[in-house]
Image (cartoon, rainbow, N blue to C red):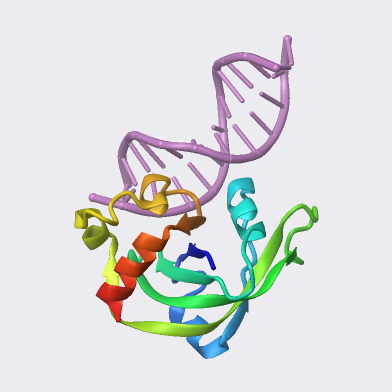
Length: 134
DNA sequence: GCCAACGTTGGC
DNA sequence: GCCAACGTTGGC
């Protein structure tokens, strides 16, 4: 099973909304690298849910419930999306500032490539985050 | 197929 | 609000 980190601006789609919806199509990704990461996702993979711009913290995790399929919001039909569900809030959120101070986490892919909206998370990083947040 | 110009993202 | 990073577009 793989782990990922997906970003969303709370003003566009927030964690509260995710909790209310229980399930969401991850539409709107228009970047090939991010799309490739989504293509690699399997049902059951865990995605950390990160609030960008406002909050700048990991707030919880969701699970992939449907693999890569066409994104109806893409008029050109080039990009796809995955569907995520089963949102689980963390007892403690994890801010970007804290991540940058943490030896195991400061090299996370999304920290280095801040513009990438879907990025891989290693086993080690995920285990560490679970330890901090639960 | 290169590269300059431009647009967007996101941290600060 | 600024700016760095980086993806995309379009002229040649």
